[in-house]
Length: 251
Image (cartoon, rainbow, N blue to C red; front, side, top):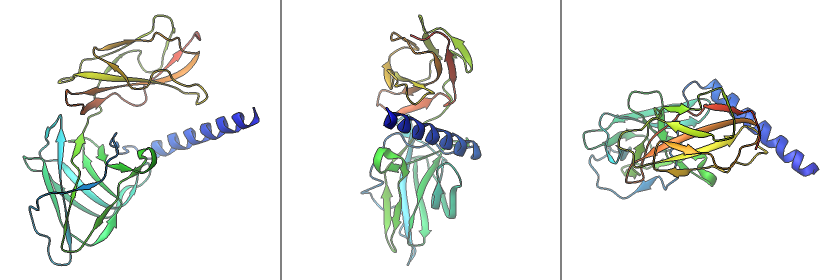
């Protein structure tokens, strides 16, 4: 029992620290939901200048090339605090979604960010256990490295019920949201604010725009999220990450 209390305490402290870090950075970059090897094979579009290297890749949205997207190669990177730092090298995608960051000094760079259109959010590839850390990139003199295609997703999916800060009953609770263009299906998740309470709903696939909560939720505070995917299983958008509601009568 003592070990369980210690574990719960550690989880609560970790959650508080992560929330504090997020608040200090007003626009933290979104991360890619699927970790993948950061580099692959490709055909070189531009040869690097002597003594430098190039970074080449593509950016897509909704399984199609995304044009005029800003891409940054970051010498240093802080996911929650600091963001892209040190020496930063940039490029923009063409009509084919292709970008080439040229004349980059040989070095191991901490992250590669692709801006989500005209927003303050960016997507970056992840690696490591649970895909928490940003993928790094080793630039070598006189060579071009080819990075995995970045698939953008937006954060403008609108939820309808329950609204943020709402108090609702667990009985006959049904989550609702607005239909998102080009969506084939959605994924719904509900997370308890209390880390000791496990969730029965994580990435539940839904074909429509509502989800009936069949297993009663315990009394307390919860956060819910919905994500939209196209027919190629590419994420199109997600709802805001801070939509919380309160269950007033525990199941």
